Amino acid sequence: MILAVDIGNTNIVLGILEGEKLINECRLSTAPNDSAEEYAIKLNSILEICKINPEDIEGSVISSVVPPLIRTVSKAIMLITGKKSIVIGPGVKTGLNIKTNNPAELGADMVAGAVASIEKYPCPQIIFDLGTATTASVIDKNGCFIGCSILCGVKTALNALASGTAQLPQIDIVAPKSAICTNTIDCMRSGTVYGTAAMIDGLVKRFEKELGQEATVIITGGLGGVIAKYCETKAIVDKNLVIDGLRLIYDKNTQERN
Image (tube, one colour):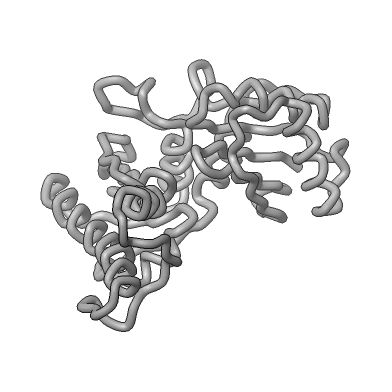
C-alpha cells in the first residue's frame, strides 16, 4: 500500500493505493504555514478515518507546486510511516521525454499527469487540468511532452471577479439553462461554465491544427467533470490522472532500486 500526495496551491490530494487500485482519496486545504507536526496530525487522522494502519504504508510519492511544503509534508509522512518519500524532481526517473526550452520548469503535477495519460490513452494527446490554474499539456504522436498553455483557473478567476468588482458576488459553479442569461448570477454562471468549455474547445482546435492531426483529449482536476459535459469536444474525464501518474513513477523508481 502506498500514499500518493499531490500538493497544489489550494488543495492537497491524498491517494491511498493498493497495487493499481485507488482505495481512498482525500483532500486537505493547502496551509503553507503549518508545521510538519501539524500535517502529521492531519495525515494520521485521515488514515484513522480510512481505517488504515500507518505501518501498512510501504512508501509514498509526492508531487508539489508549492516548494516550501515539500520538506514539511515529507517530514510529516516520515513521522507517521517511518519511511522516506519519493519527490518528483531532479534525479527521479519518470520516463517522460520533455521537449520544452527548460524541462525543469515543468510542474511536477503536469509531469505525473502526462506519465499516466501516455500509459492509459492513445497519442497525440491534449490534457486539461482544471485546478487553481488551468493547464493544457500537449503530447505528440511519439509520446513526447512538447509544450503547454497556462491560464487562470476557474475558481481563481471567479474570486478575482467577485473581489475586484463592486456588484458581482461569489457564486456556485453550475451551468444555467442557457448561455444567454437575464440575471447577474446566471450571467456569471454562463461565463464561467460555458466560457471555460468554449475555451477548451478553442484551444483543442488550435493545438490540433499545429499538431496536424486529431488528438485524444483528457480533462482532469477538481472541476473537470463539471466543465467537460458542456464541451463540444469529445473528451475523457479522468479524475485521478495525477494520482495514477504518481503511482507509476513510484513503481518505476522503487523497482529500479530493487
